[in-house]
Length: 497
Image 1 (cartoon, rainbow, N blue to C red):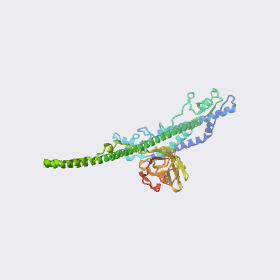
Image 2: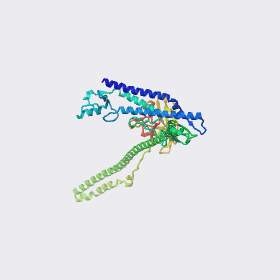
Image 3: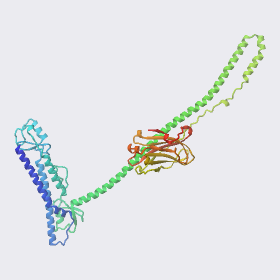
């Protein structure tokens, strides 16, 4: 155990000293990084002093490359140290042998000891049991140190991938000089290495302007991200339009459902009307038939009585009662028989279709922007009788009321049946109220629903759509006063929830 502690301190000391050396190198190379980030131009008339400065820049770039190589070597060395010697992978829940301090994955060494072939350490061959393994509690600290080294490497412009053993993916190499490509020539729009940038003899990039590759990369990424955001914004508009179309489809289907119920009600009304007409006409004919049957029964009684009397009397007596029988028969025939034209009932039935409802959806937009006493009108529409109407929504914030009203725009005054529904995504929460009122062009107290719903209910029960709108379905038709019970106030209207 003492030896394991020494090994632990040695590893930590090695990692700490490596980290300190890297930090000092980062501080000493800050000026070089600043130079690499700036724009550099080389021309043919370069003086000796400028040549010296160019050489210094080359040395600085080389020093930067050396630092990056050192960091990668440190990361690789740490990865080699912290590998399981059984599975040769990254340590998982590491435990060490108390004798040789060799590190193993806990599952790997457990399977090794449980296999039965060996009950000893794979490295030092000492007899070993599960309970003798020592858990490496400082392993998390080493992982944090490794992540810090990786972040330092990433900050120098390298591509830090997540594959392999935790070391970032290697940078692209210059095909000519086999050096890391870390500059971008703005003149010829090529990525080059430091040798290409500082090669005065060949002069391929002489008089060219170039920047550090990671700076140009970040600029390009920023521009590309901006373009992609524009495309995403365009896609969001398409998605919003699709959502509006889908909601429009749902509203059309809802109106169809209402009209379907209306047709069912009309069919029931028409069938009831046919039954009523049939009953009235058959009642008249049955009354005439009953009267004629009673008259026939009376005649049969009289005929039977006269025949019975004639059968009992003698011949002289029959001759004497002849005039009496003739008078009785004449009296029977004197009752007039009605002509069939007088009692005939036309065999025709009318299909009495009630007035059709005018159904639609009024969408109240930008609800959250409403001020107190805000009034919004729907588009004008016509009913089955040619009258023109419009719906008015009135928001009274001070009284926590949202009212709905029907207004006659053009046409003769009439009685109207009006049903308004505040649509909710949950059909069971849809608020529906109905009024039957006499409408003319003079606004009055009973021509709408002043307290259709409270503003608190709209907001708290999620009647407001995501696009800040309310959907009001209206269903109106002309009616007669006998179809309704007259009310003194619209607040006493029929309502359904």
